[in-house]
Structure formats: structure tokens, C-alpha cells
Length: 432
Image (cartoon, rainbow, N blue to C red; front, side, top):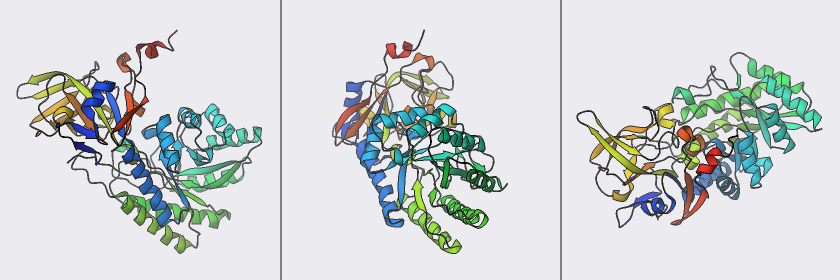
């Protein structure tokens, strides 16, 4: 019925998430409000972890991609499921360390890590730093020497795979700001460069071909290319790389016409390619890491809004304005991302209207969606926008000095606040 399995309709005709009544959640915590279903998050992590155990004999790690949604509680959940994380900033790393996340299970990413960030990561013995460029490699070497340490690293490689997704979220092709290219010989040169630098220990390689990918073939191709490169490194330098991080990018269902492949299918077919290609080149199967983010939290989350106005422009469109918008979900203005919307207080009714869901900001482009089927809304109705668990809170802003919303986690029908709503005082806290 809905794009996420954790959603249903109760006897009152209200939308529920994880068996919790969304109308009651809106009354209790206010709107806009991010709501997450803990059961869905845990189930997805367990599916991924189970696939590592099954297809790689447990020789691997699921590392949740923090950029999708980072807060203390999500890190606690990920740790309790025996998984790792990847981080892309000092802020994400600080948040993880603040709840005692195991440093050996942390991958540190980014194409322009500052000296301060690298120093902080090395001081705290982060498990793996994923190196993006030669300048960064030199910085890591110098910092490691100053701290009398040897830092384990992976090199980020561009495998040249064309993932069929939005241009802004394609990161595996040669024309990308991320990583070392294979086609130009840059990647092999980076390996040789790493071997000449003290203070670093090159353990393996990493790739990420894009996001919101529905096909399996690009992942299989990336695995084949990366294993082939590991064989080339062995043949050219004698170095045996023992780790392969295949990144993430698995698609989710945002609207009914999206048709993501079951994650088990991804894992089974990609593992088959890994094992086959390793046998071809006479390599031992490496330690495999994957980095799902959106697929862990995206479908587990919704955003609740209160309708503030309905503006009908005859023969043009109907604008429905809500108390949120681009400040809590900038993905439409960035990517024209599609969503499904439901009138939470009349979720059982047929969708008899098509609307443009408008935000409250002083921007013509502040929309959550256009051409959205929904039940006819009225002022003070509660609208739920579905599958907003990824890249909503993490990309939220204070544009127009709008406070960021609260977030709650639901488990077995019971909700708990995990992020407080920002106050007016929060908005001026750093002003001088």
C-alpha cells in the first residue's frame, strides 16, 4: 500500500509508522517532525550483515554511511548490530566518538580532509582513512610520523563505471572530484607513491560508483574492475592488498514506480563476481566492506507537516503550503527528487487531488514536490512525506532563520525523542 513496509493505517484511519499513530506524534512533538522506525533500520542492517556472513564467510564489515543521517542514537543502534560506520567530517567522527563507537570500525572519507581533521582522526586511531589524493597522502604521512604512528589507509579508486542515476550523485566515472582514475594510470601511480611514504600502511582500495542505483550490473562490473586492479598492483609492485571496500549506492523506493532490487540479490551476485574474479587472478578473497546509507534509513523515515494554506489557481495548479520545506528537505530543490505524500489524518481515504506541496521559505523554488497525488487537504491537516529518512535531517539548514525540526525514533509503537527541536536561542547562540 505504501512505499515503506513500516507504514500502515489504524482503525481511526490515521497513518502509522512502526505501529505508532502519526497524528498523535504530531500532536505530542509538533511539526515539522522527522520520525524513524527502529525496527526497519535494524532489520536492514541485519540483512546486510547476514549477507556478509553468508557470502563472504563473515570476512567483511557493513559500515553505515553516516552522511545519510548522523546523530548519537543512530550510532548506538549501528554499534549494537555489530556494524561499522563511515564518516566524512570531524563532526560526524566527533558524534560517533561521543557515544563510544569502536574506532576500529570507522572509515574516514572525503575529498578535501583538512590537516585538523586528519590530525583528529589519527589521534583517535580511526580504523581506516580512505585517501582521495596525493596531497592528502603526504599530510597523513607527516602527521603519522609526528605522532609516531603507522596509519592504515585505503585508496579511493574511480573504476570508470557509468551508474544510471542523477549526474550529481554519480561518483565512479573518470570525470569526478573523487579518487584516483584507473584509465590514466593515476591509481597505480598512487599505489607506488604510498609505498614510498613512511607512516602509512596501504591495506586496500575503495570505490563508490554512485547513489540510488537500481541495477545490479554496475556493482558487478565495479567488483570485477577492482579485483583486476588488485591483481595489477600485485603484479606491478609485489604488494598484496587484503581489503576491498565496494561502497554503497543501493536504491530505495521513493514513489510506487521505483523498483529496487532486494538487497540480498545485490549481495549474492556481487559476491559471485568477487569470488570468480579472485580465482581468475589467483588472489585470496579480500576482506569486503560495504557502505549502505540511504538504504538503511531512507525507507525507515517520514516527515510530518501541518497544512497552513491551500491556494487553488484554476486550470493551473493547487499549492498546499506546509510549515516546513527546503529547510528540512532540500532534495527537491537540489535534485527534483520525487516523494509520495499521504494525509496522515485521513490516510484510508482515496487520493482524489493532485497538488504542489510548497514550503514556507521566501523562495519560489521551495517545494517538496509537484504533481503529488494526495487526499484533498485542508488547513491544519497533517501531511506525511514518505521515505525521508536519508539526506533530510543531515542536509537541513537554518535558512530564513527557521529552527531545525525534532526527530523521534519509534519502536514497537512507542516513540522517544532522539533530537530536540531547535529553539530561538539556538539560532542566536553563536552570534556576537
